[in-house]
Image 1: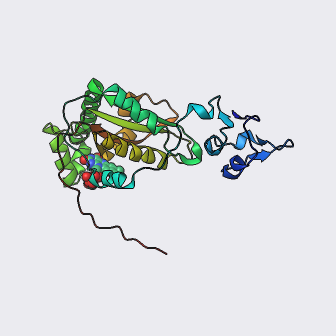
Image 2 (image 1 turned 135 degrees about the horizontal axis):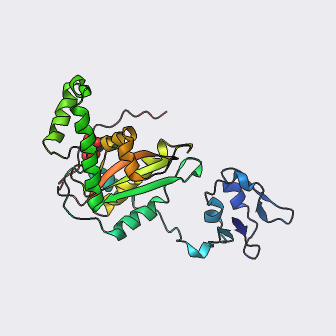
Image 3 (image 1 turned 30 degrees about the vertical axis):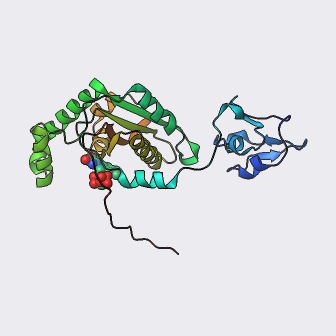
Length: 266
Ligand SMILES: Cc1cc2nc3c(=O)[nH]c(=O)nc-3n(C[C@H](O)[C@H](O)[C@H](O)COP(=O)(O)O)c2cc1C
């Protein structure tokens, strides 16, 4: 619910100008009002843009949230982006609850298509990680020993052999992983989980954690319902993306030198 405090509102119209769906209008009395609540994206732009702090959203008023002072340090962000590597060796150390909570609460700020905001974050930690590891390997080894296994290309057979030898090829010995699930009807169900986890990777790295995107686990969750059921997502949700994380047991001493992407400036 959006409320315009007439005591504070200076009728500048900034809330109207910045509304992405154009649902705010000046009412007869000259103050803004939401003319079509059903069309509101609940993005809170009106709340954030109001210079007078006259807008409240769901009973939260302007003085209850953080202010915006300056912008992030580009050099620090660039360094983080350049120095981040996929981590495949982890310390046997749990990630504390307060760290998980900080990650989760910051991810609430990720953009989602149409501000649909219907992601679920599932942190799998500690003993639970072991359960998933065991179940995934069980499923994969069963496939390997079925007639399907014989028909597999050589590279897959090599991969399965490593699992059989006890190597944690899927979860890389990570003490934790995060699954982002998305509502099956979300307008941007492909993009939203990827954006959330892209933010997660950067934020986690800034907190001293290492991460590795896990396409293998993502596919396994999407393909094997006996595995995804362990996430208890509910029937309306599907697995989007997965990232392994924990404190790294490897140190990278320098950034790499990748080829630039083909870039065109028109
Ligand atoms: C969508 C996606 C899925 C990935 N899946 C896996 C995976 O299942 N296992 C793995 O070890 N690495 C995985 N990676 C990591 C990539 O192999 C890695 O990002 C790439 O080799 C570049 O290395 P860097 O991340 O250290 O720069 C994945 C990366 C992305 C972006």
